Structures are given as structure tokens and as C-alpha cells.
Length: 187
Image (tube, rainbow, N blue to C red):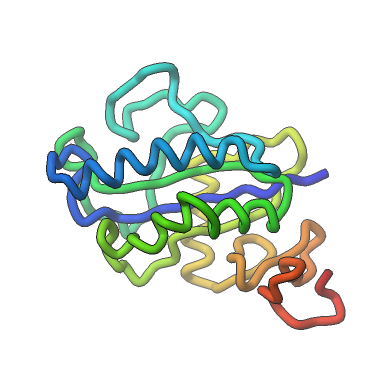
């Protein structure tokens, strides 16, 4: 059975190394959110760097998740002092569990504050795509799907919650929410 890959990307208003309370608050909430989401039904895994490495995202060993990559529109720094991004790459069993994890609890609270921390770039901040069972998506996969979504809109290759697709490529809706296309093909 295919799994759902999710890549998120946001450009921060200030570098991760900024000692300001707002930056520290974002960092601290991110750690708590990861702990909560990792216990959520339907969550399978997320990209994690090799044990204890505290370098920049760009210098870390991400193992099977591949070399770290960012969208072309990211124009901020790549050093410990200048990196200003927040990104995730994860695997899920289906759209509904991912939706529930994103739009409830601590993550929902953080979404309500996203404009305090993130720049408005005019680019999508998340993308989904289906991967065969046993396949680990890479950072480059996430970047290319997000850029495809920006350039071409939702399609089976790269889609959002609101314009989602089933593994076989047909439009779908998140059950019980009415999110997604209205179609006889939607499940």
C-alpha cells in the first residue's frame, strides 16, 4: 500500500540562531510539536539527522532521506548564523491522519501564530505525493514537488489538502470534512 509523503517549507523572519524570544519560542514549540506528531495515528516517520548533530540543515547527514535541499526561492543564508528556514519531510498512512495531526493540538496552535514567525513568500508551504511502500522520499523529492505545485497547481504528482488525489491519481476528498474536489470519483 502506498504511503503519503509530506514536505513543508517556510522562510523565517529571522535566522534560527537569533536569540530573540520569538525565535526561541518557535524552536521550543517545534520540538514539542514533533514529539506530539510522532505519536499521532497514521504517522510513520520523518527525516531526522544523524544522532546529535547540531550543524546547519545543509551540513547534516540525513541518511536515507538524502542530501538536504531547499526551493529555488529560498534566498537567505546557509550558515549556522544565517539559516532562516523551517522544513519537514514525513511519511503518513493517508490524508486524514495527516490532516488531523496538522490541524489539531499543538500544531494547530502554531499555525495560528505562523505569521509571527514566517515570511509570506507567495509560494506554497506544503506538498503531498504518494510513494510506494518501502520508499523513503528525499529532500530533493520534496523540493521538486513543491516547485512543481507552485508552477502547475495541484496534480497527482504534487498536491495539497484542498486539491488532493488518491494513490491511483483520481481526485479525492478528506472524509467527513468536505475538503477536496466534488466529484463522483472522489472517495
